[in-house]
Image (cartoon, rainbow, N blue to C red; front, side, top):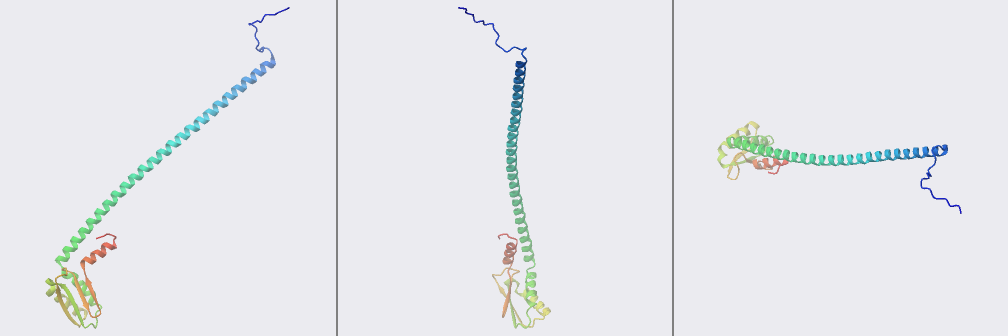
Length: 199
């Protein structure tokens, strides 16, 4: 029996001097290098895409937070502007009431005269006109209205009566088929209503 010992020193690798083996090794090394390069490139692309998505998500979140903050600031600014406008309007109304009230208190006959002029323009052929004013203004109002009636050509009977419930400067003028009322409180309410403010 011819037994051969197993030799551990035997090299079973293909020999480097074999041309077919060299080509296969080179092709294998090239394939491995290409796969590594493609894997690396794919990893870089995926990493860049992931980083870009994260940046876009952060940017979107930052824009949303910025938008909400801006909306809040604009809302606060609008509220402050409305508050200032309301305060300015309240002040203007209070000032106008004070000035108008002082003017009417100082010259109550001026408003009565204006109402009488407006009424007398349309009163041709009316037999009588009754003028009601505050009781403290009867004599002065009678003198004023009689003069205006003559100037406007009113020939009917003129009666001026004092009323304790009328404010100085207010007047009611009545004739057979009509009348005119000059009421300061109603005028103020109508003006406030016209500008959209509750009195």
